[in-house]
Image 1: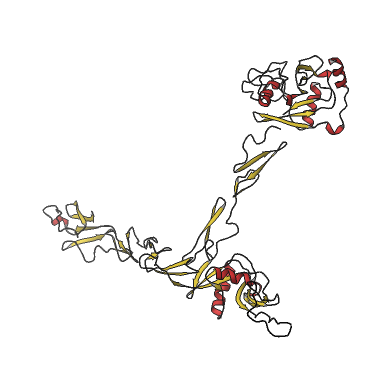
Image 2: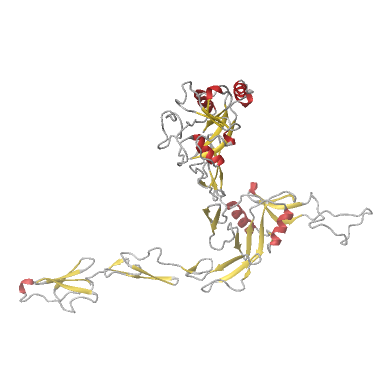
Length: 487
């Protein structure tokens, strides 16, 4: 009966659609093992050709690791993988991974049914080595079988963890990375520059972070994007999105403000300059035409007793006013249903309590969400917490030391210099500090006194506490000369 079955199996002709069909089995030491349908006789050459046609490598009967390279079971053309000491035999290693058995000749692992592996020199007819699960038979001589499966190995391209900040998905001879938020690139190794879109307005400086950014706002600017700032007793907030006039009106009201009114060219110029620095988009103003009157069927105007949806009654033909970015931010009337950016306006009020330090005056607007400090001279920072370092500009010259004060500084000069900034060299010889009749020689950093008639001296000059001005040290330079130098 078994001989009949073998003969019958040998003459099966698989349809073309099944040839080259592959099924993933398991991964061992970064190698992904598949069973691939073979068309024809299960010889070593056919197994090798099938794996290569599928774009894969082929394993030998042995793993090729240390101690598993016998010439009849492995050749250098086969892959080498770490079998972790499970077994030299490839079928045994795969069986351990797939079915938990380690018998190198095991044929009790169903996923390995009808699989053949390249076996150099196992048979003189070039047969591959195979197993049959239904009969639990091993050592099948491939020349007796047709159209079975070759064992092939798409090294696992994810084994090297190529995705720096993402999840790797292995493909066929490739991989793809699903990046974490804030990262991009083939290997998720490029930090997305959230500052590229210039999100910080009104002079703010953008700091890029992983999956985000922050804005360092200049003094008297605030908000996530530095979009809020004061002008002439009011606060103005510049939107980052485009909405209808009605939505803009509601957004400003929700934040404790109102859509901006422009009643003089000074404010219009201020707004135009700031918009040009930020969105460069057209922005809504508060002005609009009145809603069209609505009449009953008898021609009388509708009364206030009828309950309307919010924002009604209105007409799509109502006109609203904006500052037109395409015409130097001059006023222009357009339909209120169009979408543009907008500017909110809020009265600046004293803060309660005053959160400014060192005598600063605090004002707030937009329901206290924006606060500003007017700092006294000598202090800076969002809450006037920083004493301005007047020495930061290095005002003291010629080696002088700067001493910072509150809204002031002073310079400690070397003995050779004087002046507010130590800018003037000291004239050591004016007035003349030397004994009567002696000659003074100025050396910038010190001076010498020389006796003009040294031959008349009976004894050498001797220094005393009166020889030099305070702060200078006397040194005898000879019988008729001495110097005065800083101590």
